[in-house]
Amino acid sequence: MIPAAFDYLRAHTTDEAFAHLQQHGAEARVLAGGQSLIPAMRFRLARPAVLVDINSLQDLGKLRIDGSVLAIGAIARDSDIERAAWIGERRWSLIHDVSRVVADPVVRQMGTIVGSLCHNDPAGDWTATALASRAIVVIRGKGGTRRVPIDDFLVDSFTTAVGDGEMALGAEFPVPDDRTAGSYQKVERKVGDFATAAAAVQVSLNADGTIRSAGVALSAAGPTAVRVDEAERLLAGQKPTTELIRAAAAAASKRSAPQADLRGSVDYKRHLAGVLVARGLHQALARLGVQA
Amino acid sequence: MKVHVKVNDVVYERDVEPRTLLAYFLREECRLTGTHIGCDTSSCGCCVVVVDGDRAVKSCTMFAAQADGHEILTVEGLAQGGKLHALQQGFWDQHGLQCGYCTPGMLLTAYALLKHEPNPSEADIREGLAGNLCRCTGYNNIVKAVQQATGALQPAGATK
Image 1 (cartoon, one colour):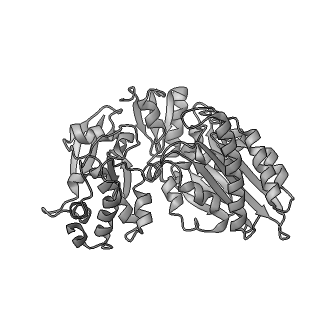
Image 2 (cartoon, rainbow over the protein chains, first blue to last red; image 1 turned 45 degrees about the horizontal axis):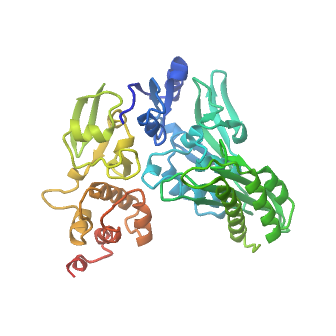
Image 3 (cartoon, rainbow over the protein chains, first blue to last red; image 1 turned 60 degrees about the vertical axis):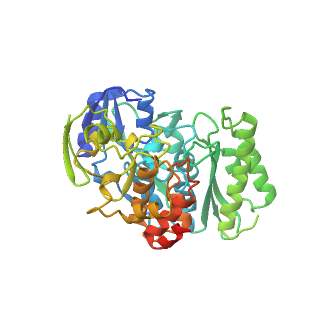
């Protein structure tokens, strides 16, 4: 289908984009990669009266390790992550894994990380990854710029902390230390489909081999991606063992609250959530040289 | 709104509605019907074109307005001086198509892939084309076609 009519405004500076958004409020949407927004408009699930195109804003295209954070600008593409010089480092293995399974390789050349966070699809890959990574989203609003932890950012399906007239400028992922590894596990029917179930995990070890901290999150397991707090608590401070991983996986199944659809039943998806968390933990630990 | 889009080195100046999708702009405004529309919902990859030299984009999921001031390469722009592009020659020699509907998208996706990775492995090629559907070939000959274009496979393979 052809989308409903709208006015197209191409912004040439961030100030200009922000001014457009302030003027048009709830009527306006930001156009970044458009790989979720344009299909939604074509199905008439979204009918913005105004699109503010931010693709010309070069300063929002950055993808840079800035001291202790990886700063991802609002128009940095998924494919920029895949091609980043540091993507092969063990500490970035969660990001490495997810960057290869988001949508499909062509969509990744337009689609953006921050756009995916702002879209907040219940089955999104970046939202679960951002939870496990404890990322922060930088939002520009009337009162200035604020930094919102991802847990507070993901309000509900397709709803985030970005208010009318506001815009997300970027996201910040903490740089993991060198005793950190992660894994992204996704079951999909075909390349480009939404996840039937997916799990993002990241594990940091202490020098003595015990787990200092863990990030565990699920996608396609509720209205938004969810953090499995119980699994993170179980893992912290413990020596990694098969039993411990089994307990974390059980916590994930318990936390998962998926919807039945053509991809599977509720029981199947909850089972899968546990399996994927276990696989992810095993892989992350293996990457750290630990067999558990 | 007025847009100026350079397609295959020719500037097209047209007055379009902002909601005009690039695929429709190419086919109906530029009369370049080599860009096919398959699923029209960003799933099949038939409509892939290359934007600004190295980015493969599904043209059903980009507005013509976004292409204003940018350069688009479509399948019509691949051959130069009556000579097929190496990728096209690969598809010809390796029997990389049957019905041909997906071929323009395959070619342009592969074109962008080779811009970033001139010597891809077979796995790289299969992964790089994972967003493009073909219902005829089973993909093997498409992969061979791309391998031929990179020099990894000899054209003679097609004659057996």
